Length: 402
Image (cartoon, rainbow, N blue to C red; front, side, top):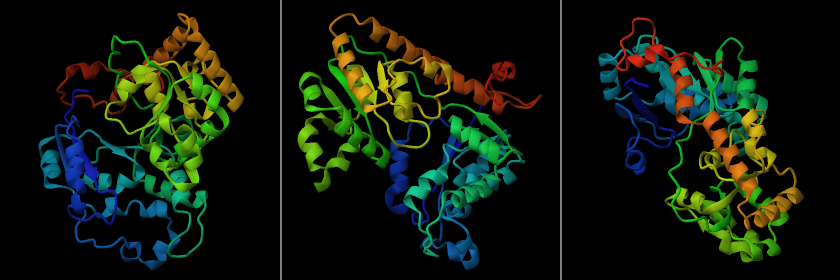
């Protein structure tokens, strides 16, 4: 976008103090490619235990939910000296904050940076995720409900000036709950997939899944209701990702005994597996927010079979509605698998159409230049601001940046 940026990493956990037992070193080691002008870490100091009662007071801590407590690390973390130096040497035109629980430290920065606006990417309704894992209030013993969690999330969100929402439900929910704020619906972007090798695909079907409960429940449904021994005899399926760890326990021996050979576990280069697959599957029956593996499959332009929940958050987009391969039930999914197997015997006009539809959806919704133009319109410098890239002065807001 032709601007200089500072990337600030915020300590995510009150128990990770100082050097956080090597986690900061690990973070730096695995993120050398962040393309920022400068970067730094907001570390916690002099905090030995996650005790909201010491920070908020006992009455306030009992009244607040874990949604509110999630902001504690950002409230206590220190801005690094390198960020102070960056602010002194640059005119800051905007702060992009990912997740509401990092807003307190963004607010500290805003005060030092001349009051520039804070734009928060909500990245789904976080209260829905927290209510699954933290329903019981540790101070009161009472099981919290979603509304209480969400109200605390909204309280914390007041620190932002504007919001970017990454899926349709998220946008509609926050716009309704906070009509006094500006809201923008901007789909996330994925880089274009690397060019495929000259070799032909050698796998019939591919599923990519990391280890989390929604993926686990979705795969259980797929293995129980869709994939059977008959399909397993005539088709090659591989499940790539560390989801295999969730099946390696006594209660899942039966599924692993039947289909253990199809699990590949975590791989270094997922692109290789996408290129090897004739068709990518997304048998999703659970989960919140936009599905990254759906976006990834579209970025590779692979033929695609999917359930309705796999396109959650983007289902109303015309490009998504034009995608072939929607399977509403287990029987429909099984039938689609058999139809796709039959199509491999010829040049497969239907498969080429699926390729074209996936690529069209990616180019219209997820290409980097689409995201960049909308973000640029949002952070467009004021008249007279100096730019390192003058072409940005001619960037016009695009449709959809509400």
